[in-house]
Image (cartoon, rainbow, N blue to C red; front, side):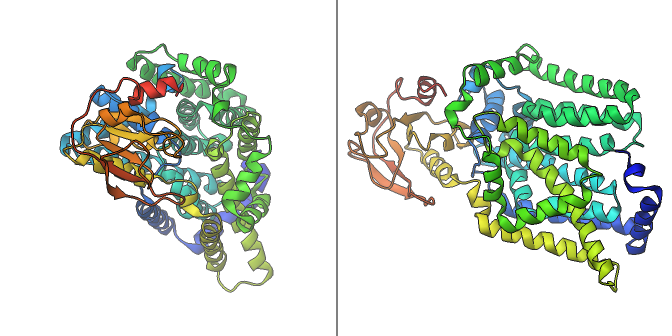
Length: 507
């Protein structure tokens, strides 16, 4: 719905005059910069490069970028069957190469790559401002503040996932597509961003499609800039595929063939159609979820296309058997932005009825509510630790690689995804200890005892691991993994080598 039709010209002027009554444009800009600084600081404090939300962070992105730079590393099934493009690995390859050149044998490549990726996800901040500004500058600042301080937004900025960056880019595209007065140049730029977002996470295509359809409904003549921007993104995607040595966009068909046709995705777990409702309750908590739903109402009419795009994303993923919370992150962040805009309208209305003494009060009250809700939600749901972890396992693998006498490290099957070669300070052959050894059901295979002089296992030394001594341990929520080392040399391990083990398991 056009802005003037939704708000009315008088309402638009009232909001602008309200903005000026609060702050001058230069002060609003300072507030935006200050909020961005707060966002950076919060993400720096939460930065934990070895913790993972999902194995994709190391095996699918950082490890594949490391392979581009060094030519060696783990090749998971997604890369072997070509079901993903190489945009993110290609992006990360540059800071990895720089880190290896500046500080070889250190964590510099990991820190640079994850730091730059986290910085790119901050595009969600201007995206929130632009969407809020469709109502007023005050609403723009609240929207930006919520993205800056909400604990899940902080966490997803620090995760090396396609969903994190794709969501930020798609939301940056949204505001011009909702604005009847946007120029064709801005529409073309938004269309290019939509295309890039879909290339990064093509499962977000329903979100992009709803926004594209809406902007055509506003003005059918927008099809030209929409097509031009989309073609520019497609050209970038094709160039990336060609650089990777693959047929442009063949990965899309391969993804459908393997994940849907062969049901590979379902191997990683299935759940019912209402799973995302449970997930939202689990990761928001009752109070934050209820407030978010209520706060959407005042802004629902103005931001209906964005809400429809979010709903389409959740519905499409609800129809699939394999579900993960990250799969609908773009919908979650969209809803949070709409709720932040609506919340200020609710508070303004409440203060008008109560004869507020200062025009600053609604703004400060709304900001305080969201900061408190973020803290309460994180406390009630477990916060960061509920959605990421395992960094201690990576630290033990790094400790093993730093010991010059270690010539091969064998890692329990439950832990091996945290010991990717790309995070180790030197090349170190890896083996995977088969299932059952960690649990104590079967002894350590003799071939692993011969081939590996270091083990990453549980707190108790497994049967058949004579000669190994414990040198370091870490504490996880439910277990205490340890690193064990024995004197002596290593041999080749064609059976349990990490790549052979992956392929044998179909991973």
